[in-house]
Length: 337
Length: 206
Image (cartoon, rainbow over all chains, first blue to last red; front, side):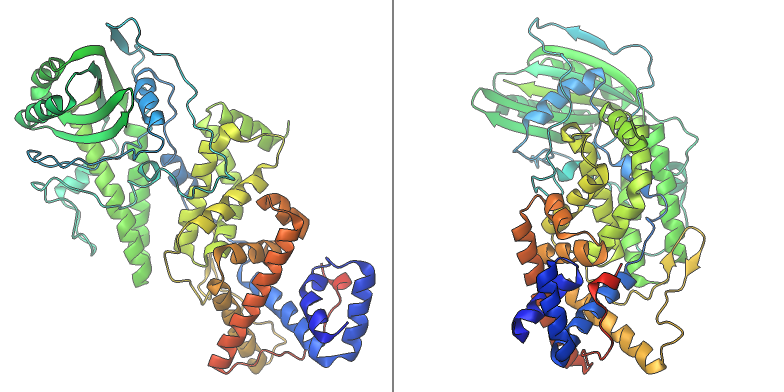
């Protein structure tokens, strides 16, 4: 065996992956050959160097909690099933679309990733007017084979809290520009208050419509009238028809009127209300942001501070959105034709 | 049923507390692997979180007879290959290791090394790390699994669902590229890479 062949086999030989007879040949060669011995020494040193740097590291503080807040919703409570059915059908299409309509006064990016605990012990009331209404509990996960290399799929579900571009209501000074440590202002103090019970009231309205465009236009008019904020959750066109979902957040005082107006736009198939407390998730995020802020204060590394700030800003936006949501009423509008 | 399998079963049934326990059990290992795959802590943290999130969603398709840890590793490798590289690597890992008890300064060299040897070792290590970062994600992954994690070729083949032949040739190519990169770096920095140390035969290696 010549040097080139031996050198080629040396790493495998060091790994113990060469069969005995060939190994013997290599060892004999090494005995006589300085150059190949150097090669072997190199690979040994290289392996050792790699292992030395990467000893057993510990996951950062609060890692498990952070993971849990990002897990997708478990769809096993009433109203989630209906929305989930649509979301599952959107496999290929984007699950979070921001529609810029001419008359819109502004829209928020709200993490739909909340996994609220259902606090209300009364079962959600379902008023079904269509006998064909499908409310069976369907399997709630897409089979997602890890071998299928999709990387970080479904950015809508894993992204929003980490400082991705958060569109803010232009009238709202927002949290941008908070890049150096600032004193906590009144608004922030309220956001960080974990003692408050934060309950989100949601009403789901599912409707059949004839003319999507007309209905969209009218919907936006009503929304603007009510000075509500909205977000398109999903939008899909299939051969058999179209589906669109909107999440609308409106002041308590304007809620009834808006709901009445929207219900008049088509044939209402289902209306369902629920109250859920997001206090758990909310408070988890407050803890997280507090911990990040401490790290920020303690850190002297500019890179690290920057990264921490991005995370902090992201979570603060999420908290703000949730805080808003808990002070108003939410309507989920599912339109289909 | 052993602990892990029970927790996995409960997680599959929707028990998030059980899943939280699984995260606690595997987080250090996955984080460590993520550091090795990405080369820097910030990306590693993202990758590690994504591993568990992906695992959570894929629970329904996980066969509980298989090894959960190996499965997580496979997810980690696949995600690292698919993610675009985001940040520059922490080339000098002399930052103190963060442990729960406190901070531990990293060992640079053993007591028996002369200052020259210690310096050379450190430089060598940096170069290896830098060279590793130049590899493609696939090549880096197999080297990490083989050299750092210590998996055998067979085990790696099973983990990545490739044939043994594929893994062998991939590791071979990865090593060739690594050596080329190191040689380039060495000549650029004027660091000698031929080492006159004694070679231990594989039998004496653990």
